[in-house]
Structures are given as C-alpha cells and as structure tokens.
Length: 256
Image (cartoon, rainbow, N blue to C red; front, side):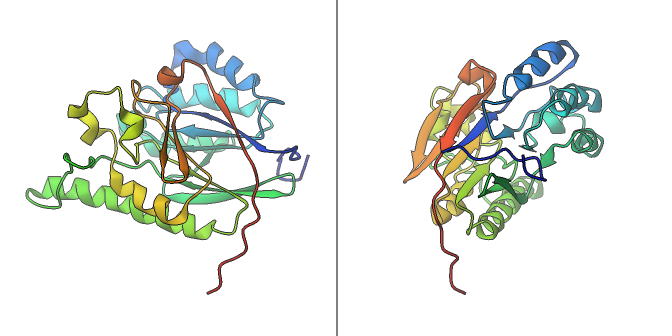
C-alpha cells in the first residue's frame, strides 16, 4: 500500500460507485456491511450524492462509521436530499472527519498503484433538456436557478481542465447531464432531474467515465458521444455498489 492509502493497480482500475444511499439510523448495519464487502474488490469508492435521507449530521454519521473502517479512498458529492435541512456544513464536517473527500465544485487526484486517477465533481442542478429547458429569463428566483446550474457547469469545466493529464479521468455528479439515463422517469419531471448544460464540458474533454444518481427509475447506461454515462442510483441498480473497470490510457500533457 502506498503512503496515501491507495492500493496497487492490478490491470484495470476498479471503481465502486453508488448514489442515493440515503443513510439514516435504520440503515446503519446494512451500510457498514455494504462498505466492508468492498475490501479487495475495488481500488476506490465514488458516491454520487444523496448520501443521507434529509441532510442531518446524525445521518451522515451512519455513513462516516462505515467509511472509517475502509482502507480505500472515498470521494463524494452532495445531492438534493443532503441539502434538505440546510445543515450541509455540519454534515460535510462529519464525513470529512471520517476521511471522505468531498468534491462539490472541486477536483482531486489519487494514485492507484502508479496510475493517477483524476475526478471532477459537482452536485449539478436542475435545468432540463431539449423541449423542457429552464430559461435565463423572467422572475429573479427562476434566473437564480439558471445561474446556479451555470456555477456547476463552470466548476466541472475547470475540474476537467485541471485533470486533463490523468491517465484515468472521471466525472462525479448527482444530477443527470443527459436525458438518456432518465428514460423510465416521467418526462414531465426531467427538468428537475438534471440539465444538458452539464454535458458541455463532458463532450469537450471526453472523460473515461461519468457517474450520476438522482433518477431512481431511470436507465442505468447511456453514452454522450464516446463517453459512457451511468446512473448509479441504488434504487435503480438494485444493489449496494456497481464496480466499474477502467483501463488507464497514456495522455500526453496538452501544449499551452
């Protein structure tokens, strides 16, 4: 094991992903058992938001207890449930104290053996898709929603630019960047499930993998051009985690 706790790489990088775990007191045992089973089965863990049921620090503690027992690096973004009681500062402190690296509008790198993995994270936000876009027009509150999504788009673009040299590059979101992984949800609510504005930086930088949650009744797998996009909401997957294998590619540093 390396000094930063990363496991040696053995072939593809193994990424255990899940979203919408919705931790609370009654899920304590199941959560601990689910994370414990990842030892030896994955190289890192990515959590795609809705870590708690209502965003209470006590609910975050359930996840923190499970994560503290892991030797694997864990990265996460927040979801809409995590904002419900507006106590995210306290909730995030609980998780970070347990070793979770929060990536809301941030990026990070971690070494798996000798392979550098870059992760660009953002919660994302609402906004819709062709035929259902929220406009940047009208009441100030509506325009603020548009602006909020724009902040995530800008952060995602900056994160992808920062990790452009990494042999493995991953985008971690809560809200969906494409409509194809929402198939199965009523189209009337797609505007509240994501925004295709998030797809712009992904299409430009072409990361190796995009993960999101939020759409419990959506579709597991789709693509944005050559980029695989997965909806890893636990209620959709019907399992605690999905382990993805990603081959490391050599990426020369861009000039300039």
